[in-house]
Structures are given as C-alpha cells and as structure tokens.
Image (cartoon, rainbow, N blue to C red; front, side, top):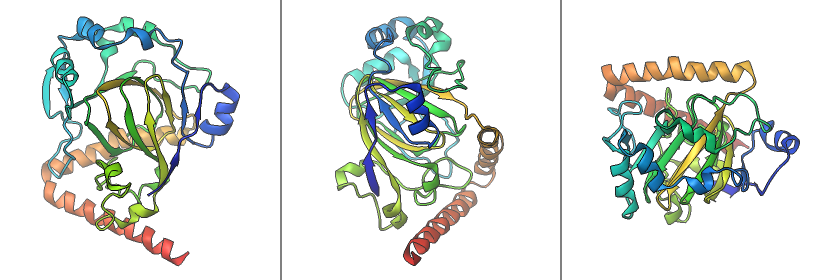
Length: 296
C-alpha cells in the first residue's frame, strides 16, 4: 500500500474547505471544529449510562463476514450500560454500529452544532454514535449511501486507513457489497504489509493513514473506503451529508434499495455459490489492475 498522511488543520474557512477538500474529494482532519461544542466536555461513559444505560443494543465482534453472514446482523445483544462496563475494564473487541442514541435521548442534539457553513445536505434526523472497546475493528468498507461524513472522535484514539472510492478493485471489493475481501486487521504490526501473497493488488492501492485523537473531526468524502481500529475504548459521532449532485444520490439509493437487497436474497438462497461467484469476480478485477500496472 502507498500511504501518506491526511492533511490536518486547527480551523479552516468555509471557502478554503470547499475549494481544497470538499470539491476535489480529499480527506481532512479539523482539530478544533468540535472544541466549542458542550458535548466534548459533557459526554462521557457515566453520563451515557445515566441517560440510556438501560437501552438494548446490538454489538459486533472482530470476525469478518463470510458467505452466511446477514447484512449488518449483530453478533450479540446487551444493554448499553452493560456494554460500557465491559469495555471500561480493558481491551474488549466489541463495538456498537450505527447506534442512534439521539432517538432515546433527543436532548443530546443540543450539545453540538451542525457545521452547515462547510457543506449542505446534512441528514439531521440521523446523527450516529459509534462505540468500540480497545482492540475492536471496523473492517475495510465504504458507506453504502455514499454520503459525505464528518466523523468526530470524543473519547479514545483510533487508527484509520482511508482510500478513495476509485481504488475499489485494488482493495478487492466484493461485488454487490461495500466490503473488501482482504483482511486489514493489525496491518501496522506487519510493517504496513497485509497479505500481499493472497492479495497482491493491495501493493498498488494509494491512500492515507492517521491516528484520530479525541476532539479531532475527520472529513471523509463520499465513497471513501475506511478501516478503523480502536487503540483505546472510545466513541465518536458521524454527521452525514448527501452529495450535492443527483448522480451521487441515485447511486446511494441504488446501493441501499437494489444492491443490498440482491445480496441479502442471494445469501439466503445460495450462500456458498454466491460467495464463490463474488470471490471469482473480485480476484479477476484485481488481476486486471495488476496487468494494467505492468503495462505502464
């Protein structure tokens, strides 16, 4: 993989953000965007336990999906309070995915501001909380609705890999899914080298690497691939904004309504055949990337 650092600023003007990052689709870390939000000082484990500790949540382990894994199905269930107690004790490879804590505690929406000056199209009904224990992993994927994301880390640190959407075949994207066939887990413990024998096209993938610190806000342009590993137990919030162009919106709707339903149906009716079919197509697309690179 060919990795570089993500640009980082303390603050940025709306005009510069749009010209340098939003319009060209380039990621950025804004360190002080959240620093005036009450949430940065107010939100913590004890506060969350107090207001939503009794709510049932689905939790996800670090095992990558296979031929028989339903889309977004939780691996276990517990209460939010019990989950917090577990991850506070030490490393725990469990995370919570797309928990809309604001449905249960709408007063939390008063603790942050929507940065409408940076971009339009925020889906204000769906701010989402992402929570993980130390060592938990969010495997390489892109967001299915193809929204722009402002991802603010409130507690703990996360190691992040980012790749533009166009790198999808080098990343071994599985057809009809938003996931990579390759496993990037603990890639940094192997001197930055995942399994190049099995997935040689990964050597060609151009992307970014960073550690997201508490208070940082990461701008992820629409369609960006991301892999995240929790260094510490912590939580973050994502604010989503629809693409301004009609084409991006249509592709997002197709992914949600068409692509996902086709994949779910095939996993139920012919899981092994469907998995093998997608794997073959994935490896063929990656081989073409390698052949193209050799000819240049």
